[in-house]
Image (spheres, rainbow, N blue to C red):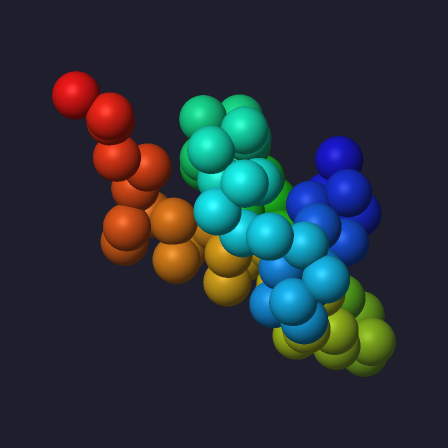
Length: 78
């Protein structure tokens, strides 16, 4: 799931995918999964760093997109 979101997020930031369309179609699912997965990602990065294999960029595209959408949630048509 994280790899999927990372791929989609990178594609959005590179302009390969239309963010508006994806946001309208997947906003609630990504928002929910972001809340669930980001604590895991942060812990995973921490564990990698402690093991001598730091990977601070791990899932950073997903984190960036989720944070962006948190700041500007999907608006209702009403």
